[in-house]
Image: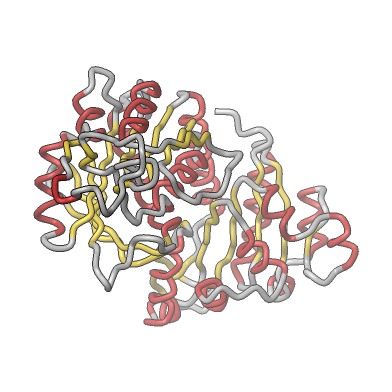
Length: 408
């Protein structure tokens, strides 16, 4: 793996462990990482900007209102520059700020504006770490998609022993090395994925059609999450109001037949995620002219089944290594989804409960249950669809690595 020019933005927080950031900087510079550093106001109580800039040979960013710094590079540019952001030490106070979305200084503003992964390295007294408020913030930040390393058990600066000791610079370095190894692995293997999303339209005549309320947002977010880890991603979308993206290829289709045609054309791939709400039925005959309500007998409307795209992919001789289906149920969610995963021969089912408590359609939020082929269920509580997507993709990648024996 080449780690030359991998870009890491380090945020030095307030806490006695801040001095260890200097050791991490030395280690990263020795291994040819590119570094930029933000130091918080409280961080300067423990480490000086001069000591950091001496090691990095770069300007240290301190305050969002510093006109000299802002003229050179702003908080958006800093967040876009980095491949990953590391916050060390991450104090209990800093975790609270992030959990409620505060953006009061350069550090918190960069994090809130970031589209990159963020690694938090907690360090605090054992009682502070175990406090219910901190543990609640931990759960919130994990749900938001933040990564954590540590804390470890050990003797602390205050003299107490327990969980709360910051991970060592060596441990953080090895974590980052493994992080980039995995990202490069996906890129170098040239993995490909297709995701179907949105509804389909099945026309009765040039005006009327059968469809559903799917917005396509969940499939769109999964496509973005796959692309973010280096997988070449194609999104096949039914008629949905999705924003254009330079990161993924989007192919727009209309009917289930169109979607199937595009899926067949896109195979083979390594990953297939069928998030689209494809119409199960279509009119047997499509009228060339608009049906007149006073002349047509709609009670005699004849329907026929559409070909099942998920089942086709799973049984194809070009079957992807990982096939993921979606289910939407108004009742018996887990039971019906376990039946579906067997019938469709897929590796995972993302199960959505359709109810007033979980208004999935046209919402930015969702809660799902992820079921594997062995019947294991992982529940993901209500969260933004982008966070749900990150969790789904994490499970997909774990299975992909297991299937690909060449990765060590």
